[in-house]
Amino acid sequence: MTPLNRLSLLTCTLLSECLLSPTILAAEKMTIHQTSQPIIATPENKLYPMSPQACISIEASAGRLECYDLAFGRKAEVIEAPSPSASHSKSDSKATSTETSIFEVAAADKTVNPTTSLLDRRWELSPQSKLGTFSLHSNRPMYILPLFYNDRPNKLPTSANPLNQATTPLNFDDTETKFQLSLKTKVVEGVFGDIGDIWAGYTQTSRWQILNAENSRPFRETNYEPEVSLIFPTNYNFFGLNGRLLGLTLNHQSNGRSTPLSRSWNRAILNIGLERENWVVMLRPWYRIPETKSDDDNPDISNYLGRGDLQITRKWNNHEFSLMLRHNLKSGEKSHGAAQFDWSFPIKDNLRGFAQVFDGYGESLIDYNHRSAYFGLGISLLNWY
Image (cartoon, rainbow, N blue to C red; front, side, top):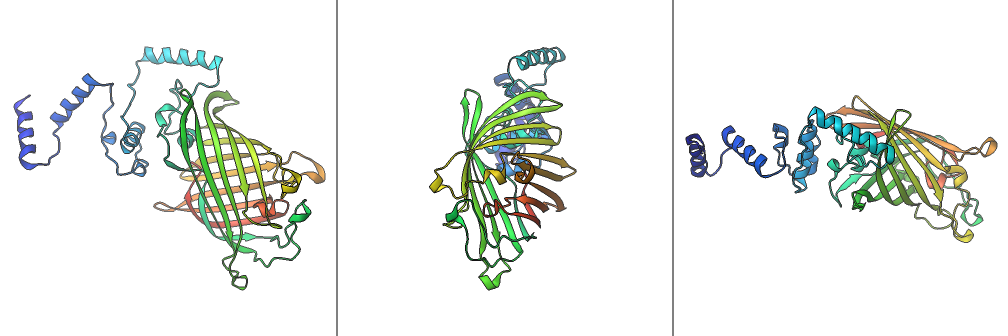
């Protein structure tokens, strides 16, 4: 050890706390390179966060990933930049693998950056983005809309089941407050070797008649939606889009009410996720799990809420736009569907606004066969991506 190093160590001992000198840091890096896998050391990845949220603002991908590793107590693992010849060899290997299977798992797909891939950021598809199990994430957008206007309130809900038809008109205002809470967590990582994660999610959406003092300000409708999803990473090209996700979801949705206002159904949903730069396309066809006739609150719900939906999301200049389309795949008088447009936009610092427009059937379960148009304005808490 050089005299300068000895002097620095002596100073640290006498003062009980000090910052490592650049010389000692260099020695530390040399030791790491000799005893473990190569680590890329930059100012960004020398962080010791109090929580994972502290890592979000780090721009450099290597620094952000190491920050997450430190936050969750995991050993940092950063890959050395490959030489041109090695990069060429990997590209050839990747091309060969893609021909044999779409489940490239993004493990060999070095062209996908887990910090910029929107689907990877949301579902931890590549090995570099794995954060382990039982950490909370947003499942769907979380927001509160103090102003949520309905042009045709459903004051006499009906159903194809005679037992589920209201007989007395309900006293509801056309303006209410809507809010949505939605979380998910990974419960199993690597179901089939290195691929396949199981996620459990829960979403709750409430519509509160906060201005309806005459009727004691009731919650007009709350929908509860627990679900379990098996998610696989994929790697294929489809008309210029990168197919990144394939999953299966078992979903239950109900409004938790008694007859005649009870509404519920169960679905098996196929999830197909594609992306390109700041665009994401999610296709979700589903199959309604049948119920016995006597227990079915809404036997014709698929004729109104459809057999699937398509969601297109675009991030642009700190704005997020999302369009949801669904349809029952029928024509003529039996054609029913819905469209919803969401816009999340910056206001000041971390405060974000949220606007929502809906037109069609089934904005909520009690309105599954009632067509209305809605407009809401409020605050965004968490976005899709």
